[in-house]
Image (cartoon, rainbow, N blue to C red; front, side, top):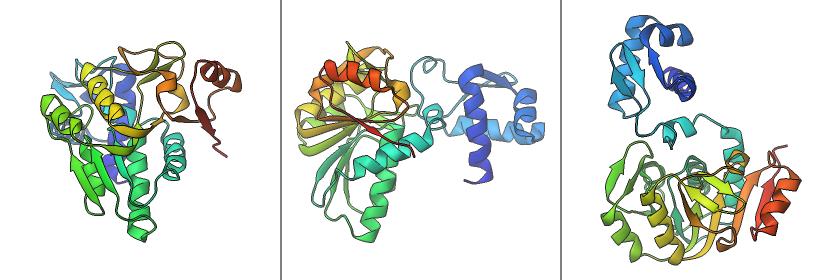
Length: 261
């Protein structure tokens, strides 16, 4: 991780709590000069990670309390990588896969690159609406990007054009993330577009796997995209208690807990 990425990670983690930050606060937090801080703010705004305001920056107003790829990608990285390692074992040469745009799914995409480079996996076809998954994998296998409106906060595409593309595509395995997993409401997301796309892909897929770190359990979000018993397997880390796992299993979920040791 280079100097810019380290500064960005530290700043975005703080913004997750503060929501807004001025030049002096960020300068003190990161240990850089005000002039360097302003250049950092400008770059983050240009990349679509923040909004410039007078004297500082803030998280996108429409994203506050919902979802931000940048913020999600600063938390529980070790757990997400371990979950992705387990999910990788479910992929075989010749598979037709769908990968959604979550940060845990990106860890799976990175793991797939390693296997494709080594020749352990061959002839994969991957459908995705994630700009980052496309960027990672397109050099190593056939990737079909569901084109549509670009959402910078999720680093993906959505909308009618993306949905139309997904309606005509069939995969034998799909990998979804979740913004929340509730014992009664099921697998949830923060917005209508993601909900609609997951529904389309789910109807056109064989096996559906959900990769979600343990912090997603017991939470609620805006919309349910699938019931607990509508997916083949939910893979999570051992931050979830055995008692909580049993509650979800009683609700019809198939859950595998990956040890972090």
